[in-house]
Image 1 (cartoon, rainbow, N blue to C red):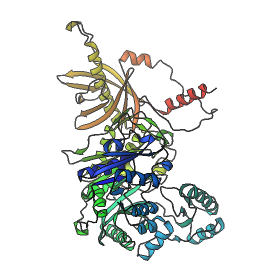
Image 2: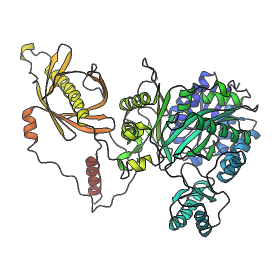
Image 3: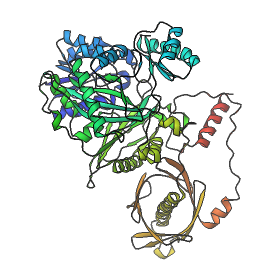
Image 4: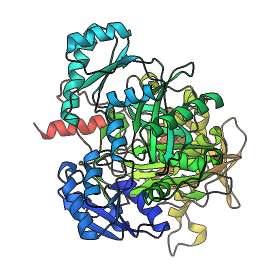
Length: 632
C-alpha cells in the first residue's frame, strides 16, 4: 500500500480524499494556488505545496507544476479527484514516465471514453444501447442540416470533446441546427481546443440515470447500482439520488450489465460512471462514460456502504476487488443536494466573498436511522473565490426510504446556515417541497418546466405561516421578557409584557395571545384552541430555533430585526413583524414603500457578495437603484 499520495485537486473533493487516506494510514500532500493559500484542503493535508497563481490554467491544470510538486514531496501516487486533470490522458502518461501511480483508469480507457464519437462507437460494438445519430465528424452547417433531417427532429448537437454541458445545443428545426451547430463549434473550440461536432436524436422528457462501475487490474468488474441525476440546470446536475425512483429491477439489471460490458471492452479499472438517457418507457441509451470519480459518488457510498475512494486507492495499488456482483446490496435511499455560491433570485448569478456564517447541520447517524453527511471544502470566515467552481458543499442524507430521505433533506437544509454570499439553499428547499419531485416525476427539463421565469422565492401555505407566526411570537415574548430584567430593578416594578400581539408575515396578519405556562409558552390564535410552543431553549442572539408545536417539528433560521425577525424556512425568506395591537393599528396607516423603477436604468449582472441582511426582490431593486445613483 502507498505511504504518501498527492491530491491534484482542491476544495471539497481534495478534503474527501484526505479523509479516506487518513483512515487508511496514508499521508497526503495538497497542492494550492495563491487564492487557496488558506483553503481547508491545505489545512487538512499532511503537507501542502504551492503550484502557482489563482487561475487554474496557471496552477491546477499545469502538468509540469503538479509533477514538480510530486518530486518535491516524494509522493508515490496521485489522486486526481474530478475536473482539472482527472480525465487528461497526457497527465496519466506523464505520471507513468515519472514512475508514479495514477489513481484512476488506464490511459487507453481515458482516451477511448474521452472522445464522444469514439466512445459511442465502442459502446455500440460492446452491445450497449446507443442513441440514434451520426457519430462521424460533420464538416459544416449544410451537412448538419441534412443529417438532422435524416435522424428526425428534435436533435442534440454536441461537442465530441465536451463535458459539463459545454458545446451542447438542442435543435427543433433547420434554422436552429444552423445556429446551434456554429455556436456549439465555437464553444467547443474555446473550451476544449477541439471543435469536432456530432449529432444525435434528442430524447424528449429524458431522465439522466448513471451506473457506477468498479474494476480492478485483474479483470474483475462490477456495478454498484444507479444514480438518478435528472434535476439539472443548464445541463449541470443540482440534486442526485440513489436508487432511481423510476427504474425497475429488470431495467436496473440490464443497464448494469451493459455498463460492465463497456468497462470490460476498454479494460477499465478503478471507479467510473456510465451515463444513460432513459425515456418514459424505460428505454435507455448510452450517453458517455466518465473515467473518474463523480461529484455525486456519496449517494452510492451511502446506499452500498462502499467507500469508492478507498477502492480506487486499493485498485491502483494492485489489489483485487474484495467484492463480487452478488455481494452488492442497495439499502435505503440517499439524496445529495449541491450547495452553490449562486443567487437563485438573480438567475443563479455566481456570488463571491467571505462566508460570514457557515454552519452545516450535524453529521452522523441519528437515533431515527437518518444519516447526514456534508462534503465540503470551506469554513466559516473563508472566502469563495471567483477563480473556481462555485460549489460550496454537497449535503447528503440517507434514510430508510425515499419519502424519509426527502423529509430528512428538507430538515437538513433548514438547519444549514450560510450568510455573507448569495447561495441556492432556498432553491434546494423549494425542490424538496415540490409535489412533482416528491412523486418522482422527474426529467432533465424539471427546473425549466417548473420555474420557466426563474426562481422568485417560495410562498408557504397559510397553515405553515400560522405555525411560524406562533414561533415568532414565542421568540419575541422571550426577547421582551429578557429586556425587562434590568439589574437592580425591584421585581415588582418590572415592565409587564402584554399577552396580546399581532404577528404579520408574508402578507398575513395573525392576532394571538401568548402566556407563559410554567416552562412552556402557550399561544392562542383567534378562533383556535391554545397550543404549546416549545422553542427548544432558544435565547436572543441564537440564529437557529428548533421548535415543536404539538407533534410538528420546525427548524427555522432566525435573525433579529426592528419590531421582529427575519425568518427562513423551506425556501421561504421573509420579515416578521411582532407588534402590540396598537402598534399594528398605527403601522397600517403608514404608506407602503414603493419599489424603485429600474426600467430606464442600464443594469449589468455581476457576481455579488451579499450580507446577512434581507435579500428580497424589493431590497435587491433598491440596491440596484443606489448603485445607479452612485454612478451618475
